Amino acid sequence: MTLATVLLADRALIRVSGGDAFEFLQGLITYDLELLAQSGAGAGALLSPQGKVLVDFLIIREDDGFLFDLPADAAPDFLKRLTMYKLRSKVELENVTESVSVFAVLNGDVPDAVDDPRHKLLGQRLYLPKSAKALEGDALSQNDYSLRLIEVGIPQAPVDYTLGDVFPHDINLDQMNGIGFQKGCFVGQEVVSRVKHRGTARKRFVLVSAQQDLPAPGTELEAGGKAIGRLGRSVGHKGLAQVRIDRVGAALHSHEEILADGVPVELALPDGVSFSWGRSS
Image (cartoon, rainbow, N blue to C red; front, side):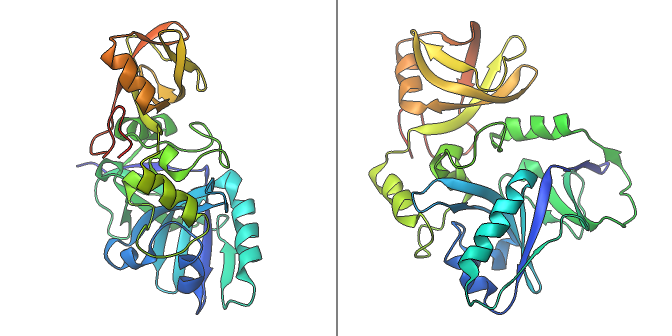
């Protein structure tokens, strides 16, 4: 198989190290760091006390700490918040974006890369010094990568949602093992646990397709004249949409046409999710 990679220039990297790094992070983020001993990488988020996603990320275990792979626009605020929580903890924080490049390896197997924990079809994540020799193989476009994310149902800020406006369940983070419900307290944990145990997660990201190019992100989805969600990113005829699964379930039961700015669309659940139309988990 020919190696195929995508340079993800819109990502930033924050390194957290030091003797207290594990305990410091374990009490802050949604992901259970104990799982990294087996996986090497995980998906998680830092929440507000009200349970909203301030930033979501991939987290990678390193020999002397942890590497956070996150949207570049969110990096300054994330670093500021970690600094605020640090207090007297023996923790070192460093933005290494200027010295390390982020690649997605969609085809092939690179020994120094880690498996993307969100979905097997997202391949691997590779972090290389900016000075490193260019990788041999096919260089794919950002559109290629966006299409792969769409096909496996993985949304990303800021196109699909706005950081600070969504709960973890709203972006399917629980479906990616991104919430450590058994690990104990973390910031926003009480709100997130309540959503899980009461089964009140109604907003979910699903797959959307049409017979023509989809309208712009943010376009409302309607059924029977009522709003049921909105579009996220799309590539051609395929895209993602954040919907109210209960309202979609009602529309499907009534055989109502679902429209996006007048364009008929079809909705589908991503493979492997635990929720269904009208049921939160």
